[in-house]
Image (cartoon, rainbow, N blue to C red; front, side):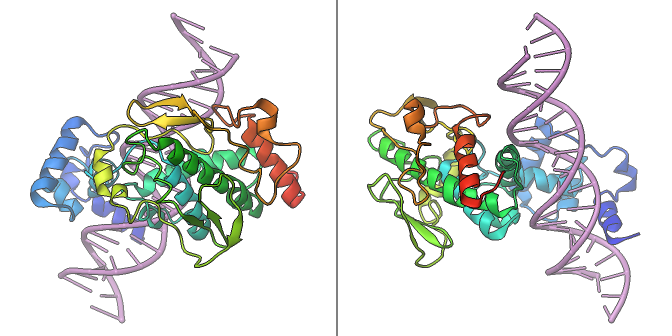
Length: 308
DNA sequence: AAAAGCTTCAACCGCGTAAAG
DNA sequence: ACTTTACGCGGTTGAAGCTTT
């Protein structure tokens, strides 16, 4: 038997109970049992924990349930703009190192980030008919999506001022004073009062952590994040809207007259400004056939001469 | 209203590796 | 030094919910 076989058997080694090991979704009772047991005895030693707690589960299953779901500091709900930006940045740096990426997103699990990547980002790559690992796609992320995200964060922060709560907690955009510079590998995006961003030579090559040094991005925010967070990922282009974390509604931005994020950027396109086309940048609910695609296709074709 | 298709995400699996014996 | 055990990571799956037709 190989190593894997051994491991697999170890988690299920209680032969007399093997037949009655439960699998699949956890029940409320099981959750309660696990929470209670860990509250009294702590984590770790998952196999014995499962046995001692009287759970008909493998240690592996208990560990996963606890880490990804029951842990008190786990954040659940929609990935915020800052988190999206961070995920894109860190993934471009580390690839599918989900747990490593998750370490920089307090309260988020590697599983959740992985799911986000697969369901949102990879889906988008698929729609653009390019490989998620291709240079084209990576550059599209870097030069198109990430600047957009930065601008959206900035816009959210701007409109959030005076809204109360819009800059509290990790679920919302940090204030503009928090966001100063977004560093990518080779360039920075200034996040001053200007709406446009100009790539600049990188200074330190580091990753700007929007949430980590701010206590609002830590576990405190996690525990208070029982309400959802903005539905605002790459594929849901509510750019013309803002999110009210209090009532969880989107509302039209009052003084927002944003141009395309690509406008003012170095690869500014002509004749493709989405604002010109419909007067409402990315006024769309989903990516399918929307302006993201048009923009992205344009970018891919002009930047690389690709027929992606 | 119902069926079909699609999306999301919790849970599982296989594997590598560190720690313990 | 070798074997066994435990843990953690990344990939994959499938059920449930949602959307579209």
